[in-house]
Length: 176
Image (cartoon, rainbow, N blue to C red; front, top):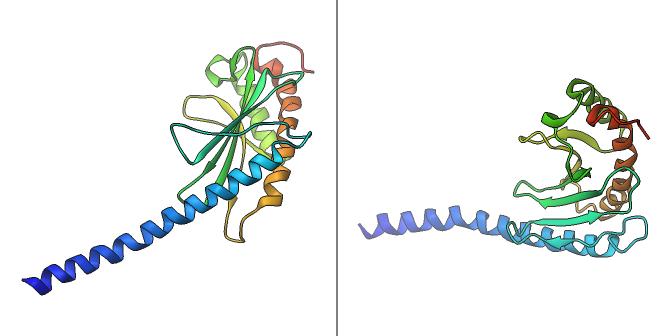
C-alpha cells in the first residue's frame, strides 16, 4: 500500500512540475513585456501609458488619443499561456466600438477588413461580439521580441487612417 501511495505522489509531483515551470516562465515573460511597454510607451511616436489589468494579470491596457478619425485606440497586450504575446487594438469611433451589427454596410466593411488584412502590417478582424479590431501576434520560438514589439507599438497609430477610409461602411460619412 505504501509503495502505491509513494508512486502516486511521485507521479503527481512530476505532473505538477512543468505546470509550475510554465507559470514561472509566463510570469517572467509578463515582466519583460511590462518593461518594453513602459519604455516604448514614453516614445513620442507611441505616447501611451500601459497599466496592468485588475481582472487578468497577464493583460496590459492603454488608450491612444489625439487622432483625426478615431476618438481613441484601445490597446490590449496579452501574455498568453501558449507562449505568445498578442496585441489587439480596438478603435473607438463616435463614442463606442466599431461593431459589425451597427455598420451601415456590413458587407462592404467586411470586404475592407479582409483587404486590409492582406495589405497591412497588422491584421484585421472582429471578435465574438462583432467589435472590429486590428492585431498582431508574436510567438516566442526565437526569443523575446522587444525590438519587434516597439515596431508594432509605433505602427498602431496608423490604424486611425484606415478607420477614416472605412467611414462610408461604418456610418455612411465621407472617407477621410
